[in-house]
Length: 222
Image 1 (tube, rainbow, N blue to C red):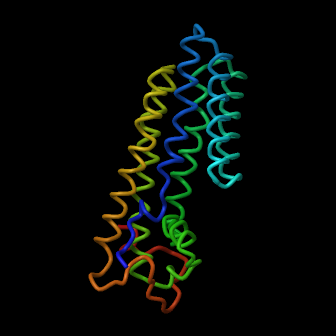
Image 2 (tube, helix red, strand yellow; image 1 turned 180 degrees about the vertical axis):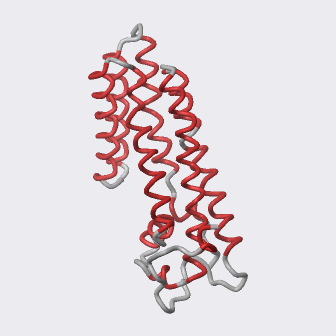
Image 3 (cartoon, rainbow, N blue to C red; image 1 turned 90 degrees about the vertical axis):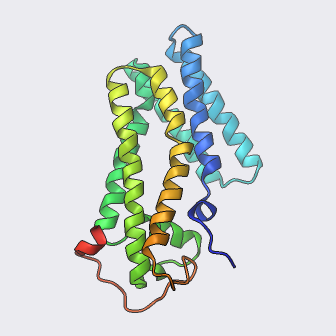
């Protein structure tokens, strides 16, 4: 059996595409309504509700669908409460900052989130941590995801501070699925490059002595 890529294991294209619809409709409704926050919020919520209904009918997990819908509701409420259209994107900024921090910390404590996620999807639980080569590869691959969140922050924060609502909507589209696809490809390349040539791959960790939880060694953080 051919070794699956991270894109095949994690998927995520549909979720990433769905996440761009409400922000685009928010900006469109805001503009069409004469910069009306109510029109923008209504358009975003209608889009989110439609996406949720479609995904539930296609058999998506209700929890994941409802989380996405809740996120749009919170973003709309923040914008309505502050009276600033750019604050619709504030939740996205905060979540990216939190994600960057969480992924970085996970690498330092030798529980890289890329390994946690892939291990859970493949039904390995924590067996991958007993494979030093795989643990190291997941750690280095996880830095790519940290950089993804940092890149988003580097774009979103200045646009938000400058009240550039339309540019935020464009950036949200450009830095969602295209960036996720690039992140999957690059982190997969990093993992494959880091693993020994004779390693059996993600599905077959070489289990042995469990690694220490801390501190991270210099080679792992490199």
